[in-house]
Amino acid sequence: MHFRARRKFGPLVFNFGKSGMTSWGLQIGRWSWNSRTRRQSVDLPGPVSWRSR
Image (cartoon, rainbow, N blue to C red; front, side, top):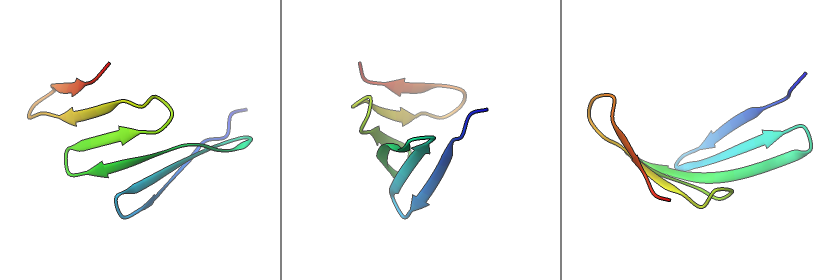
């Protein structure tokens, strides 16, 4: 059984797993950034999105 939880506090998003906090990120409008992957992404109109490598 897997445990995952996500908590949002304004633009901050905290991701938790079985052993505690796994990552955190920022989400401002359509732009977001994740601390674990260090990637940023932008949701574009329609079914399209962009992610950095």
